[in-house]
Image (cartoon, rainbow, N blue to C red):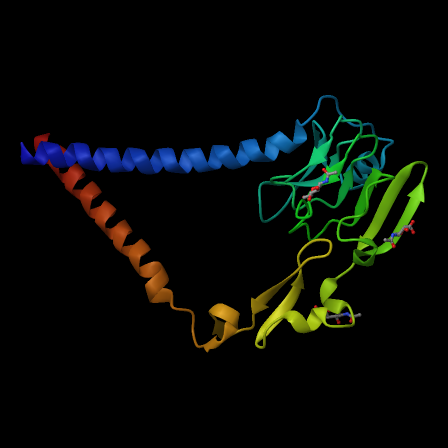
Length: 233
Ligand SMILES: *[C@@H]1O[C@H](CO)[C@@H](O)[C@H](O)[C@H]1NC(C)=O
Ligand SMILES: *[C@@H]1O[C@H](CO)[C@@H](O)[C@H](O)[C@H]1NC(C)=O
Ligand SMILES: *[C@@H]1O[C@H](CO)[C@@H](O)[C@H](O)[C@H]1NC(C)=O
């Protein structure tokens, strides 16, 4: 009787784990796809994003150009949201790998300040004329107005700016670009913690210890289940 209870319990844990993994995976996939299906239609090969896509042999999915990458399954490299009736622009989840975004011909009134935070590779944007480039003119190599559109070209590395910005990272940390107008500070090798003040190795035991312990417990429970099954044969 006792064994039976244990068996149900382990099965439940395994089921929960499987569901968790499936849920996370499908959630990430839907997030990725949502950006591509924000509005109907597909893009033409003659548009800037279309040209980029055919040059890099990408795969078109709705309003996205996807490209295979050695690290991840597929990444969005181009996003053509031209004529999408967009009025606001908040977060573009799953699109932070994008190189080019076209937002022309949209009645946009506002773009959130943090909409393109983390978009490190973004190098070309087409915006309605009245919308400023994210991060302002100083975040781009070239800003120009052409045929009713504002073009933001070449994202500047905020860490390379002269002035205080590059000095904003605490000692023992490195400045790295983090999207137009943004930068992030990451601790230099061998430093960690708040403001990178602590020196020493990464506390592997404290971080991975609990993970290893729970794996051992689950493995043990699985082993018990299997043994019970084998015995009953
Ligand atoms: C645009 O958004 C900012 C916050 O992101 C807000 O402060 C501002 O009032 C908004 N402007 C308009 C015209 O909606
Ligand atoms: C940014 O650059 C554009 C195009 O050169 C210019 O029209 C605009 O006035 C500039 N904006 C600011 C705030 O300097
Ligand atoms: C820009 O900064 C990077 C490090 O963030 C540095 O390696 C590079 O030499 C800098 N380039 C210029 C032109 O200062």
